[in-house]
Amino acid sequence: MTLEDLLLDLLKLDRADKLRAIELWAHEVAIEEHPALTPGKEYAVWSPYDSATTARQLQELSDETLGL
Image (tube, rainbow, N blue to C red; front, side):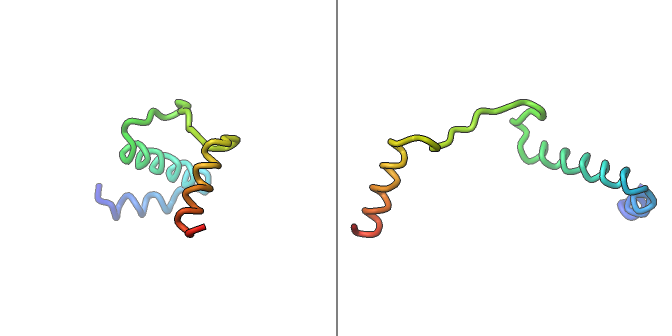
């Protein structure tokens, strides 16, 4: 089956099936781009939110950059 054949078949699908196809392919592309990430697994992400030390360091860096 060629890509053109596949696209023609996809156009024949109803709306729900088209959306499901989009979800499936977006998921596949994401896996290819980030193979170290496991779908459905939660990963901790560090954030400077509520971090006074980080806020102070960013302010000092900003002040130095602006010459304040």
